[in-house]
Image (cartoon, rainbow, N blue to C red; front, side, top):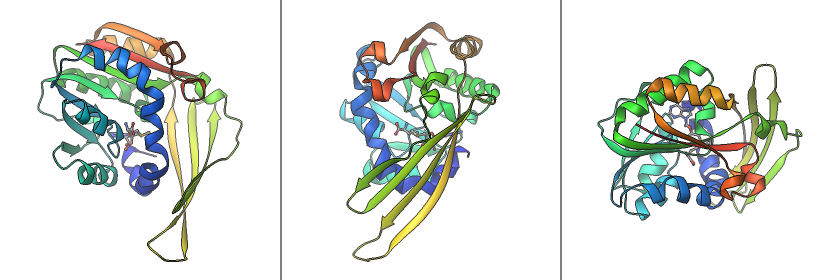
Length: 246
Ligand SMILES: C[S@@+](CC[C@H](N)C(=O)[O-])C[C@H]1O[C@@H](n2cnc3c(N)ncnc32)[C@H](O)[C@@H]1O
């Protein structure tokens, strides 16, 4: 599934999933990003989705630009944050007017890059948008995050939406598929609509990610396990935070 295929699951992602990230990841982002960026700086939210992290960046006073390939997710973000500039773009071919003081990519968005070449393209594009010394922070899942997968369904319930998800991991191709089934009720109707979708991700070796950052021209590269940054175990298992400077 490519980035723009998130269009199919935009409403569900926004309602059921996206807001779990920020509370869990906060200790890591405080330490690696928020503390290291000047107040009111220009910041790029790379793969911003429906804008949950963007909202936090705006509340902290940064001048934020968001970019994502899903027009449906960006429409939700733009509806909630009319003052923010959003772009619908594939981050493998970034065309944005820099320079930004920082770029942040959250919630394993970069695991959606299904080849190392794609990851290289994103790193090189982000590098090009940053000013000298600009900070790039992102999190990615390594293989251990997917190996916990027991093929169990997780159920998520809200008053007008029910989502079921389960992960499948192929250790040969290093690809993970998250299967999603969800039911939504529109307005006062008694009818529930069922939809189904699959999100594809790929994991990489830590050293491949670091080498790709170096190849793009980044320096001062740091790699931290989310657990070491006090992210809770359930969310942080196998998740790593990367920090680098242009
Ligand atoms: C798990 S969501 C995370 C969204 C957001 N960062 C958050 O924390 O809520 C992954 C996001 O990556 C975006 N994405 C995946 N591939 C992309 C690509 N090639 N270009 C731009 N966005 C992409 C999807 O559209 C989706 O919004």
